[in-house]
Image 1 (cartoon, rainbow, N blue to C red):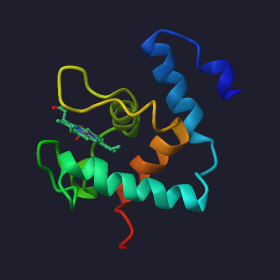
Image 2: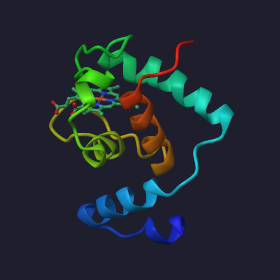
Image 3: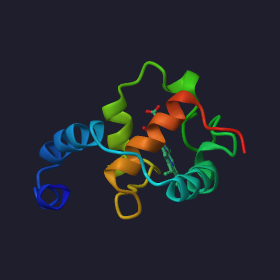
Length: 112
Ligand code: HEC
């Protein structure tokens, strides 16, 4: 089903599918979850701050994200924000993983 949806070209269509598709899916595997947390701390942290409290990028703490629409945040991570330093992650992360990461950011990352 995912494979069928991927080729649809228009961004708006893909965006809609992204939010529909991610809501019902299972979580990444436990080992992938550990990799994702590492990626968030290292790679996202390089711009958003090692504690994600902001740097070149905006803060990604639960407080900062509380009032922002989840779909918009997921789209930002997946597609990046053209014209800003925020890069797209769709070559590295799938929709389920982006959804999972945004959930973690909004509820707070677990302590190491
Ligand atoms: C090269 C620097 C850079 C990296 C790496 C980066 N970001 Fe960003 N990110 C930014 C910038 C800059 C913005 C603000 C864009 C703007 O001005 O709208 C941003 C915005 C965001 C936003 C929107 C925040 C909001 O309040 O609207 C989210 C969510 C986000 N990034 C998540 C991530 C995640 C998750 C990762 C790692 C997978 C990541 N970013 C990696 C630079 C980066």
